[in-house]
Length: 254
Ligand SMILES: [Zn+2]
Image (cartoon, rainbow, N blue to C red; front, side):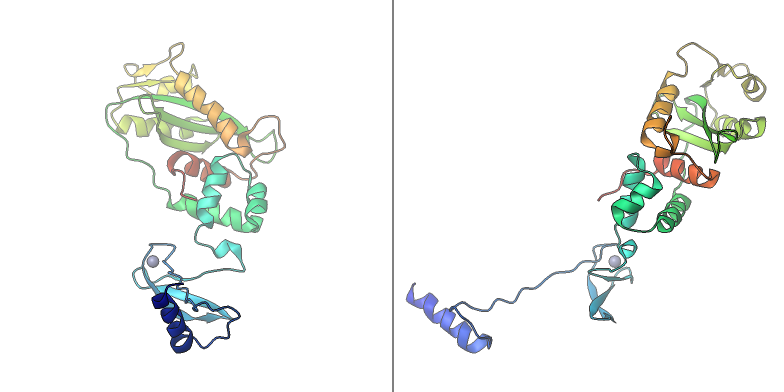
Protein backbone atom coordinates (compact mmCIF):
# COMPACT_ATOMS: atom_id res chain seq x y z
CA UNK A 1 0.00 0.00 0.00
CA UNK A 2 1.41 3.43 -0.86
CA UNK A 3 2.46 5.48 2.13
CA UNK A 4 0.08 8.36 1.32
CA UNK A 5 -2.97 6.03 1.11
CA UNK A 6 -2.02 4.26 4.33
CA UNK A 7 -1.77 7.62 6.10
CA UNK A 8 -5.11 8.69 4.67
CA UNK A 9 -6.86 5.48 5.83
CA UNK A 10 -5.31 5.87 9.26
CA UNK A 11 -6.57 9.45 9.36
CA UNK A 12 -10.11 8.32 8.47
CA UNK A 13 -9.96 5.58 11.10
CA UNK A 14 -8.82 7.85 13.87
CA UNK A 15 -10.53 11.15 13.07
CA UNK A 16 -13.81 10.42 11.27
CA UNK A 17 -14.98 7.05 12.47
CA UNK A 18 -15.44 5.78 16.01
CA UNK A 19 -16.82 2.37 15.03
CA UNK A 20 -14.82 -0.73 16.05
CA UNK A 21 -13.31 -2.40 12.97
CA UNK A 22 -11.98 -5.93 12.52
CA UNK A 23 -10.10 -4.87 9.41
CA UNK A 24 -8.42 -1.57 8.70
CA UNK A 25 -10.97 -0.07 6.33
CA UNK A 26 -12.51 3.40 6.46
CA UNK A 27 -16.14 3.69 7.51
CA UNK A 28 -18.16 4.78 4.48
CA UNK A 29 -21.37 6.72 4.94
CA UNK A 30 -23.94 5.66 2.34
CA UNK A 31 -26.31 8.42 1.29
CA UNK A 32 -29.56 7.24 -0.32
CA UNK A 33 -31.13 9.88 -2.55
CA UNK A 34 -34.94 9.70 -2.42
CA UNK A 35 -37.06 11.29 -5.09
CA UNK A 36 -40.81 11.87 -5.09
CA UNK A 37 -42.46 8.86 -6.84
CA UNK A 38 -45.16 11.17 -8.28
CA UNK A 39 -43.10 14.05 -9.77
CA UNK A 40 -39.44 13.06 -9.11
CA UNK A 41 -39.13 16.22 -6.99
CA UNK A 42 -37.02 16.77 -3.85
CA UNK A 43 -38.65 15.56 -0.59
CA UNK A 44 -38.12 16.57 3.04
CA UNK A 45 -38.61 14.40 6.13
CA UNK A 46 -42.19 14.59 7.39
CA UNK A 47 -42.57 12.65 10.65
CA UNK A 48 -42.78 8.90 11.13
CA UNK A 49 -45.39 6.16 11.01
CA UNK A 50 -44.24 3.76 13.72
CA UNK A 51 -40.56 3.41 12.96
CA UNK A 52 -40.83 4.09 9.22
CA UNK A 53 -39.82 7.52 7.94
CA UNK A 54 -42.36 9.60 6.01
CA UNK A 55 -41.38 12.18 3.38
CA UNK A 56 -43.17 15.17 1.83
CA UNK A 57 -42.40 16.42 -1.68
CA UNK A 58 -41.52 20.14 -1.79
CA UNK A 59 -42.93 20.50 -5.31
CA UNK A 60 -46.22 18.55 -5.30
CA UNK A 61 -46.75 18.48 -1.48
CA UNK A 62 -47.60 14.76 -1.53
CA UNK A 63 -46.60 12.60 1.42
CA UNK A 64 -45.03 9.18 0.83
CA UNK A 65 -42.88 6.50 2.42
CA UNK A 66 -40.13 4.22 1.17
CA UNK A 67 -41.88 0.99 2.09
CA UNK A 68 -45.55 0.34 2.69
CA UNK A 69 -47.15 -2.50 4.67
CA UNK A 70 -50.34 -2.05 2.60
CA UNK A 71 -49.19 -2.49 -1.01
CA UNK A 72 -52.23 -0.65 -2.39
CA UNK A 73 -50.67 2.61 -1.09
CA UNK A 74 -47.63 2.36 -3.42
CA UNK A 75 -47.51 5.07 -6.07
CA UNK A 76 -47.02 2.58 -8.92
CA UNK A 77 -49.99 0.32 -8.10
CA UNK A 78 -52.41 2.09 -10.49
CA UNK A 79 -49.94 1.68 -13.38
CA UNK A 80 -49.69 -2.03 -12.64
CA UNK A 81 -53.49 -2.39 -12.54
CA UNK A 82 -53.85 -0.64 -15.94
CA UNK A 83 -51.15 -2.77 -17.56
CA UNK A 84 -52.47 -6.07 -16.22
CA UNK A 85 -56.04 -5.14 -17.19
CA UNK A 86 -54.99 -4.40 -20.77
CA UNK A 87 -53.08 -7.68 -21.01
CA UNK A 88 -56.03 -9.96 -20.31
CA UNK A 89 -55.98 -10.30 -16.51
CA UNK A 90 -59.28 -10.43 -14.65
CA UNK A 91 -59.96 -8.53 -11.42
CA UNK A 92 -59.22 -11.52 -9.20
CA UNK A 93 -55.98 -12.37 -10.99
CA UNK A 94 -54.82 -8.71 -10.67
CA UNK A 95 -55.60 -8.86 -6.94
CA UNK A 96 -53.59 -12.08 -6.58
CA UNK A 97 -50.63 -10.82 -8.64
CA UNK A 98 -50.34 -7.51 -6.75
CA UNK A 99 -51.26 -8.94 -3.30
CA UNK A 100 -54.07 -6.42 -2.81
CA UNK A 101 -57.77 -6.94 -2.20
CA UNK A 102 -60.41 -7.43 -4.91
CA UNK A 103 -62.40 -4.44 -3.65
CA UNK A 104 -59.31 -2.22 -3.97
CA UNK A 105 -58.81 -3.33 -7.59
CA UNK A 106 -62.48 -2.60 -8.40
CA UNK A 107 -62.46 0.84 -6.77
CA UNK A 108 -59.13 1.76 -8.42
CA UNK A 109 -60.38 0.70 -11.88
CA UNK A 110 -63.47 2.89 -11.38
CA UNK A 111 -61.43 5.90 -10.25
CA UNK A 112 -58.89 5.49 -13.10
CA UNK A 113 -61.72 5.20 -15.65
CA UNK A 114 -63.31 8.42 -14.29
CA UNK A 115 -60.09 10.31 -14.99
CA UNK A 116 -59.80 9.01 -18.58
CA UNK A 117 -60.58 11.70 -21.16
CA UNK A 118 -62.11 10.79 -24.53
CA UNK A 119 -59.79 11.86 -27.40
CA UNK A 120 -60.65 14.86 -29.57
CA UNK A 121 -62.33 13.76 -32.82
CA UNK A 122 -61.03 15.10 -36.13
CA UNK A 123 -63.51 16.48 -38.67
CA UNK A 124 -64.22 15.00 -42.10
CA UNK A 125 -62.95 11.43 -41.55
CA UNK A 126 -64.22 7.99 -42.54
CA UNK A 127 -65.53 5.82 -39.70
CA UNK A 128 -66.56 2.23 -39.07
CA UNK A 129 -69.25 1.40 -36.54
CA UNK A 130 -70.17 -1.96 -35.01
CA UNK A 131 -71.64 -3.69 -31.96
CA UNK A 132 -69.98 -6.40 -29.87
CA UNK A 133 -72.26 -8.81 -28.06
CA UNK A 134 -71.66 -9.82 -24.45
CA UNK A 135 -73.76 -10.31 -21.31
CA UNK A 136 -74.08 -9.03 -17.75
CA UNK A 137 -74.44 -11.58 -14.89
CA UNK A 138 -76.15 -14.28 -17.01
CA UNK A 139 -76.47 -15.16 -20.67
CA UNK A 140 -80.17 -14.16 -20.80
CA UNK A 141 -79.16 -10.56 -20.00
CA UNK A 142 -77.67 -9.43 -23.32
CA UNK A 143 -75.44 -6.36 -23.42
CA UNK A 144 -73.74 -4.72 -26.38
CA UNK A 145 -70.59 -2.67 -26.73
CA UNK A 146 -71.46 -0.15 -29.44
CA UNK A 147 -68.47 1.78 -30.75
CA UNK A 148 -67.02 3.59 -33.73
CA UNK A 149 -63.43 3.86 -34.92
CA UNK A 150 -61.53 6.03 -37.35
CA UNK A 151 -60.86 3.94 -40.45
CA UNK A 152 -57.49 5.61 -41.06
CA UNK A 153 -55.94 5.70 -37.58
CA UNK A 154 -57.84 2.86 -35.88
CA UNK A 155 -58.58 5.16 -32.91
CA UNK A 156 -61.86 4.44 -31.13
CA UNK A 157 -63.75 7.75 -31.12
CA UNK A 158 -66.85 6.93 -29.05
CA UNK A 159 -68.29 3.99 -27.15
CA UNK A 160 -71.49 3.03 -25.34
CA UNK A 161 -72.39 -0.03 -23.29
CA UNK A 162 -76.04 -1.09 -23.21
CA UNK A 163 -78.87 -2.63 -25.19
CA UNK A 164 -78.74 -2.54 -28.99
CA UNK A 165 -81.56 -0.03 -29.39
CA UNK A 166 -82.08 3.19 -31.31
CA UNK A 167 -81.28 5.44 -28.32
CA UNK A 168 -77.84 3.92 -27.66
CA UNK A 169 -76.90 3.71 -31.35
CA UNK A 170 -78.02 7.33 -31.82
CA UNK A 171 -75.54 8.52 -29.22
CA UNK A 172 -72.65 7.21 -31.32
CA UNK A 173 -74.04 8.28 -34.70
CA UNK A 174 -74.68 11.80 -33.30
CA UNK A 175 -71.01 12.02 -32.30
CA UNK A 176 -69.97 11.02 -35.84
CA UNK A 177 -72.40 13.48 -37.45
CA UNK A 178 -71.15 16.29 -35.17
CA UNK A 179 -67.62 15.50 -36.38
CA UNK A 180 -68.86 16.06 -39.95
CA UNK A 181 -67.90 12.53 -41.04
CA UNK A 182 -67.36 11.82 -44.73
CA UNK A 183 -68.58 8.21 -44.66
CA UNK A 184 -69.72 5.72 -42.02
CA UNK A 185 -69.39 2.00 -42.77
CA UNK A 186 -71.71 -0.27 -40.79
CA UNK A 187 -73.16 -3.77 -40.99
CA UNK A 188 -76.65 -4.40 -42.38
CA UNK A 189 -78.56 -3.51 -39.17
CA UNK A 190 -81.73 -1.67 -40.24
CA UNK A 191 -81.67 0.93 -37.41
CA UNK A 192 -78.64 2.61 -39.05
CA UNK A 193 -80.78 3.60 -42.07
CA UNK A 194 -82.92 5.78 -39.78
CA UNK A 195 -79.95 7.32 -37.96
CA UNK A 196 -77.49 8.13 -40.75
CA UNK A 197 -78.16 10.16 -43.93
CA UNK A 198 -78.21 8.06 -47.12
CA UNK A 199 -75.29 10.03 -48.64
CA UNK A 200 -72.75 9.09 -45.95
CA UNK A 201 -74.04 5.67 -44.82
CA UNK A 202 -72.23 2.76 -46.52
CA UNK A 203 -72.95 -0.95 -46.19
CA UNK A 204 -70.25 -2.74 -48.18
CA UNK A 205 -68.63 -6.15 -48.13
CA UNK A 206 -65.24 -5.86 -46.31
CA UNK A 207 -66.30 -2.30 -45.31
CA UNK A 208 -66.12 -3.09 -41.57
CA UNK A 209 -62.98 -5.24 -41.70
CA UNK A 210 -61.01 -3.02 -39.36
CA UNK A 211 -63.61 -2.87 -36.59
CA UNK A 212 -64.29 -6.62 -36.84
CA UNK A 213 -60.56 -7.20 -36.27
CA UNK A 214 -60.75 -4.81 -33.29
CA UNK A 215 -63.56 -6.98 -31.89
CA UNK A 216 -61.19 -9.93 -32.00
CA UNK A 217 -58.48 -7.96 -30.14
CA UNK A 218 -61.05 -6.93 -27.52
CA UNK A 219 -62.14 -10.54 -26.99
CA UNK A 220 -58.50 -11.58 -26.56
CA UNK A 221 -57.23 -8.69 -24.42
CA UNK A 222 -60.11 -8.21 -21.99
CA UNK A 223 -60.72 -11.21 -19.76
CA UNK A 224 -64.43 -10.46 -19.32
CA UNK A 225 -65.01 -10.65 -23.10
CA UNK A 226 -63.24 -14.01 -23.62
CA UNK A 227 -65.54 -16.60 -25.17
CA UNK A 228 -66.08 -20.09 -23.71
CA UNK A 229 -64.59 -19.24 -20.30
CA UNK A 230 -66.11 -18.69 -16.88
CA UNK A 231 -65.18 -14.99 -17.07
CA UNK A 232 -67.96 -12.43 -17.48
CA UNK A 233 -69.05 -8.97 -16.34
CA UNK A 234 -71.22 -8.60 -13.27
CA UNK A 235 -72.00 -4.94 -13.87
CA UNK A 236 -72.23 -2.70 -16.93
CA UNK A 237 -70.40 0.06 -15.03
CA UNK A 238 -67.29 -2.09 -14.65
CA UNK A 239 -67.46 -3.22 -18.27
CA UNK A 240 -67.62 0.40 -19.41
CA UNK A 241 -64.77 1.38 -17.04
CA UNK A 242 -62.52 -1.43 -18.38
CA UNK A 243 -63.30 -0.48 -22.00
CA UNK A 244 -62.54 3.20 -21.33
CA UNK A 245 -59.12 2.25 -19.92
CA UNK A 246 -58.48 -0.18 -22.79
CA UNK A 247 -59.44 2.27 -25.54
CA UNK A 248 -58.21 5.62 -24.27
CA UNK A 249 -55.46 5.07 -21.68
CA UNK A 250 -52.00 4.21 -23.06
CA UNK A 251 -49.79 1.58 -21.37
CA UNK A 252 -48.18 2.88 -18.17
CA UNK A 253 -44.49 2.72 -17.11
CA UNK A 254 -43.99 -0.14 -14.65
ZN1 LIG B 1 -43.73 15.31 -5.94
